[in-house]
Length: 51
Image (cartoon, rainbow, N blue to C red; front, side, top):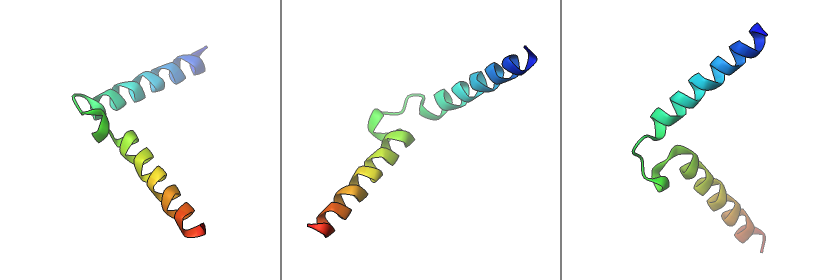
């Protein structure tokens, strides 16, 4: 039971940290979205090199 409570507490802290990171940040400027955009860009570049 204590293990589950500790995991819940850690998850809640992570949620608060993530919310603070993206608070009032436009969608296109959120870190996860920017990372996803870079991944797509790199995949597109790789595809262009193979065709």
